[in-house]
Amino acid sequence: MKIVRIDAEADDITYGTVEPEGIRLYHGSPFFLWERSETVLPITEVKLLSPVIPTKVIAVGRNYVDHAAELGSKVPDTPAIFLKPPTTVIGPMAPIRIPRGVGEVHHEAELAIVMGRVTRNVKEEDVASHILGYTAANDVTARDLQRSDVQWTRAKGFDSFCPLGPAIDTEFDPSAGNDITCTVNGELRQSGTTADMVFGVAEIVSFVSAVMTLLPGDVILTGTPAGVGPITDGDRVEVAIEGIGVLLNPVVEM
Ligand code: ZN
Image 1 (cartoon, rainbow, N blue to C red):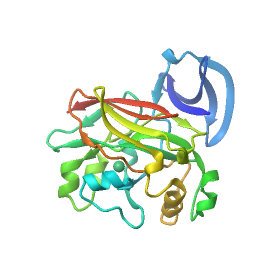
Image 2: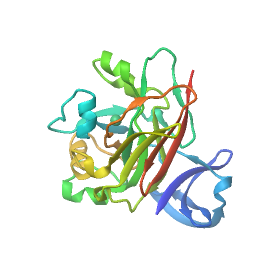
Image 3: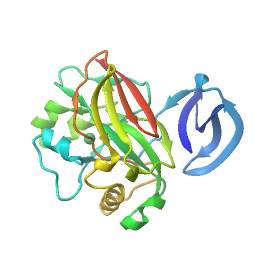
Image 4: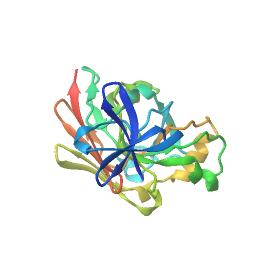
């Protein structure tokens, strides 16, 4: 099942699933009172929003060997986690807004885990039943600030620096080695597969859940392959994950 969140009419935000004829609307949410309706809207009539509103976004740094190398870093012994505030989250087609004067800003194509239920101290072998599904993410990063600041909060935390979407795929298998790419204005910048991750999904979720309680809808970004690079005003950035879809966002400097 592919779950989307849509703005069907003004002030009427709801969830749906992607079907051959269009988007089927659901009452409630995939986390609470999920109930199929008879209404199917043509895809051209719906505006997609970020597929989830997380209470927090956790991200894993340097989780691909080739990306750690391009930053001149080593792969850590345990997952190197940091937080992005929920106000970084935007949906497909929403602009990534780069504040003037922050220096170079980079795209980072990533597989995102969407949690399905309250998760605390979960064992690796029990992780799967706690996950709702997977979506695509762009861990937008102000690279100059990341280098100059001790903490990464500013570099990773600007509003709009976490595009998510287009859909949550509940059947996605991250161990299958699906392609992850990032394209800017049609030019391929990043290319890897989910099988290249140093720490896998079960290890990451178990590790994070030993630190903080994960709530339904919380999102974990699993790191980016090599090829990160700058995005600037007027660019169109596409993160594509085989089986999930394409997350497209324009870039504006303001
Ligand atoms: Zn990242």
